Image 1 (cartoon, one colour):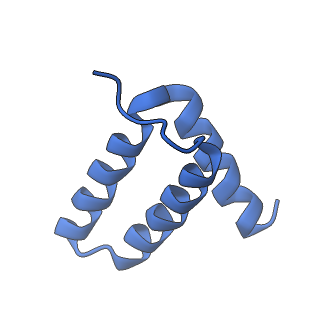
Image 2: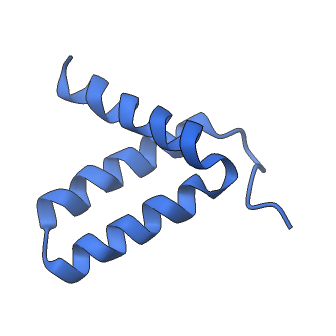
Length: 64
C-alpha cells in the first residue's frame, strides 16, 4: 500500500466508524496531537481530514 492509499484507507475507516461525527473526531485528534507537539501526526491527520472532506457530499454536516 502506498502512503497515499494508506491516507485514503484511514479516511474511509474513520468515516465508517464515526459517520457524521467523523470530522469532529479528526479535529479532536489534530488538536490533541498539536498539544503534544507532534507535527508529523498533525500533518497526517490533516491529510486524512482533506480526504474525508472529499468523501462527504456537499451540504452534509453534523445532524441537529
